[in-house]
Image 1 (tube, rainbow, N blue to C red):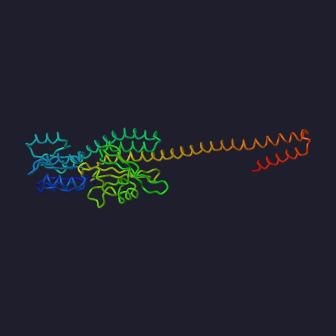
Image 2: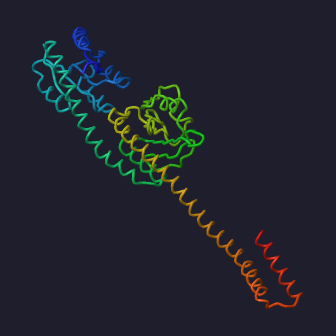
Length: 360
């Protein structure tokens, strides 16, 4: 696909320039290296989808360079250039994982076909691997929806993120629903869960960019700011990715993952996997928060119902006692059971007191 980045390694300037011009004309972004060591250094600093290399070069062969690059960019495609009589090296190149080879002299059509086929093949392999990884992840993330306890949910999300990407550190920050400040709510390392202290808070620039861009932010040690707001002795991060947690276009938090070795930078497949995880996690977190609010409201209603019952019981007692007394004495007066005027007055005074009690 035009636009993909290609690194050419060849000690012969004319061959390098010819390949670079031909591939650039097809829309590829091309850079050249004059040696295997230069190719390795350029691959460390920049992203390339394919290495086109001459097998025989002074100092370090193209196969040695490709093997070294594979250590930190295992998904890079490869096309080897060799001459007749070196079929043993061609076989070694294919065994190493290179996608195709070109025999000198080759035509521009052969060059374009080899590069195009290698990129297409590697693209299909990546897509197949991505789908195989995403399907079980999607099924697993669906189980998040059944977890209603927020702390348990966050722990499961973090464990899965570290497990699937081999990250050294994972930090999850959520917006406070009242202040909207981002607070550290969960921290996970390869050794297990850590206390979610502010020591692990993401730097302001990374958090701000993830919230504003609403898409993954890739971070390298060469960035001006550290990945975390302040350095922690527990984990040294040199390469990282931060993803916004979004529900209905609203950012509710950020998931950040870091690694200690720049050679183990997050691959595109890692970012895609984490994007699926982040989308599912955001919904599950929002559901858990909603469940927590509903549960709290239900508990409050239960308490109100209990208080209402106690109140009615108390009021009932306070009403029935004086009413019973008033009713009894009034019946005595009506039945003329009390004839003595002094006693009648005493009865009426009692009725008055009980009436006042009712009024109170």
